[in-house]
View (cartoon, one colour):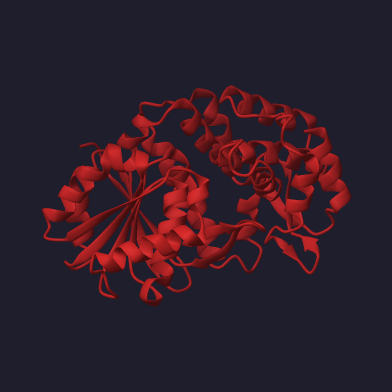
Length: 357
């Protein structure tokens, strides 16, 4: 096994480790046993991750005398629902789990968000371990404790901040990702580069897919900095992570979570945020060109599909949780490597940017 790195996520209320390396799934049981004492646990996975990794994870847990129950949910954003939360909780009860039990989230962002929310509400909160299996989840969604499900009115409107006790990111599992799934994770890396790290942004020109651990580590470090300063997304600092997401989430909703993957919608949101940034803070055209080029390099969309209604996007934007007292906290970037929250972005600005997509 190659070198393993531990990154500490510190918040105002607690701290936990993110372990990044290769071959980590095989020793998952013993790694968790150092943090959690034996007992019953649920391994929540979707159909794909259960097929690829479910048996290995369950056996690793059993080897440490845990009693795991594998709970499989349908793949896709539609599983982020209150109905699915109830279904998972019912299965956990039937398996004999109680407030002394814990949960393992084995999958991408959907599984992590759903399972994390289940852990937050089951018996008013039980421990959970994030085992992210997609690039997007490893570099972004598994870090920071945000858990949520969607409702008809919008994305992630029902949720809780519930931090994992441990995150185990085995970069070997990324080799199983189809290109489209891998590329949507790159959208979040591009976002991190735009808001914080121009060197990270530029490194994507020569991405080494055979050595992803350093890339994953750097993105976790960036996310950790924001979480440490603004654990519950109240001061505005953590809001910078929403660059491209206000419009991106609205595009997902307008496409009924079927047309585009999350990272693909974020790609379009980044394009729109760049146009607004040019207007509001003078983002240089050459920076916009670099951003468009890197998105296209990873086959991420820069034009809105014709079958997604712009009016539905605008309706969804106004229901976004980033609105406060009727005003949106919109993240803009004056240059690659820097971003801030603007309070003077209007719906007309957003309408014009969406019209250009």
